[in-house]
Structure formats: structure tokens, C-alpha cells
Length: 85
Image (tube, rainbow, N blue to C red; front, side, top):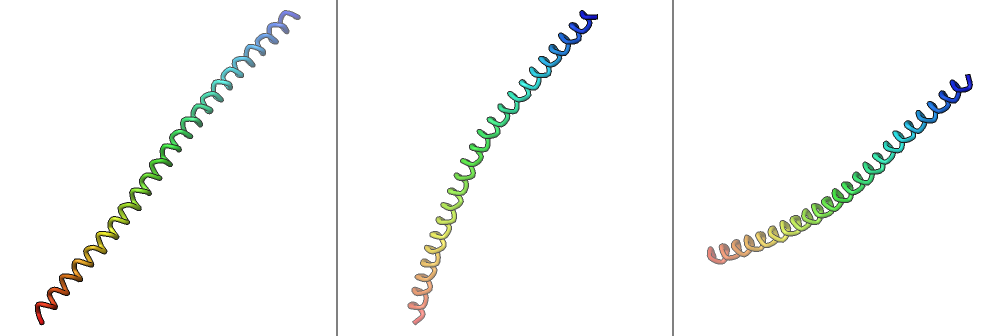
């Protein structure tokens, strides 16, 4: 009966080792996944920053073009009014 208990104890140790190894592998996979997600998040944040900067530059260019166009239209109206007098 002693050898049966010893065998069961050894089987439990092996099962616990296997469970521990499986758990250890899962934890390593989660750590790698978190690191990959962190890297991806950093890339996405950098892209977002670039897009926001580009958007602001486009808005500024649009505002400048609008101001210039309004100035040209104003000058054309002035020339038209001067010619009609």
C-alpha cells in the first residue's frame, strides 16, 4: 500500500508540474501579448499625432487660401466699381 501512495504522490507532483508549466507558458504568452499591444498602441498614438498635425496644417492652409481669395475678390470689385464710374 505504501508504493501505491508513493505513486499517487508522484503522479500529483507530475500533474502539478505540468499545470505549473502550462500556467507559466500562458503567463509568458500574456506578457508578450501585452508588450505587443503596448508597441502597437505607441505606433497608433504617433500616427494620430501626425494626422492631427497634418489636419491643423491643412486647416491653416485653407484659412490662408480663403483670406487670399477674399482679398482678390475685394480688389476685383474695387476695379469693377472704378471702371463703372
